[in-house]
Image (cartoon, rainbow, N blue to C red; front, side, top):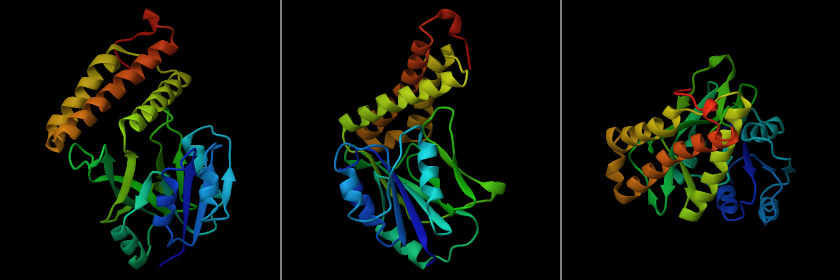
Length: 258
């Protein structure tokens, strides 16, 4: 197996980080970029690697690119602290002869005690393993859900086995991230001159729910599917409402569609 550098960004991730780091113990190098944790995150990270950096938070993309710039190997695997490399994926990586510019993994999402299987939740492919000199995280206008872009438009390959995502293990944890992410979404859009809209406040959330819960069969995940897709639709509504708040709830800033 070619040498791989793992890059993980953190802030107050003592609950998740150790399991994440154990899942990448096969890596040749582990880099942790912390945004000023006040819990035991840094202490846990230093049990697994000496390459622990502290960087003042500005956005997700810059945090991750900071870590990539400090990697010494040609290949970089980017993870969040609430993700795990599954045993099957670990075996696949160990047997893989890396080629090309990047690889996308299917993401398996754990929501309130259950793995979601429908409604676009699995397989949910993301580019995470890439050539260090080819891949960069690009700043998203919404400041969340940043993605990797390969220089030169190189086509990624897909792996068979999944990353496990434990982001939403409790409703409290979900709503805490919900509040933070919706604020970042609204803030980023306002900074880029985007305005709130009637469509975004009412029709986009309804369309999101109908598409993913009914057309993409999210209903087959039972009660968990209903809760997840209801909250996801409410996420869109809340983002638009917070954007409207940033404009001072002024009617003149409230367009039909943006």
